[in-house]
Length: 125
Image (cartoon, rainbow, N blue to C red):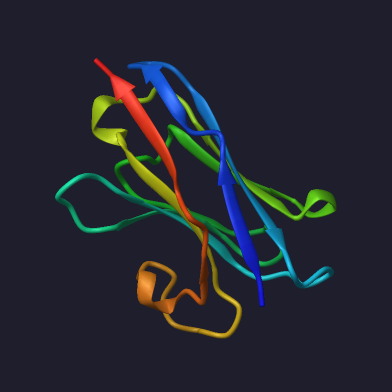
């Protein structure tokens, strides 16, 4: 069992930055891929970014490439999402998810085993 808790969301002006964190607990010493997704009102949940279990591979949605950076701190069992040059269209609830058992494509939310509760990001124009 893994518990994920997101933090760091808030209200920011367009062009600003936020750093989201996803703290994991429940399986100390276990490493697994982690993804970030987001869901805007009235829209489907969409893939944002993903980092491999050992941190040597990252993938981003085209919409955030060059602006967002995903990283992980093994000592703190935390995955971060640094978001720069934020745009109003980045407004959404952001979720982190862990892929422990499922080996399907990391682009699809159904292939993740554990989810956090989400954190709201609002970008004002």
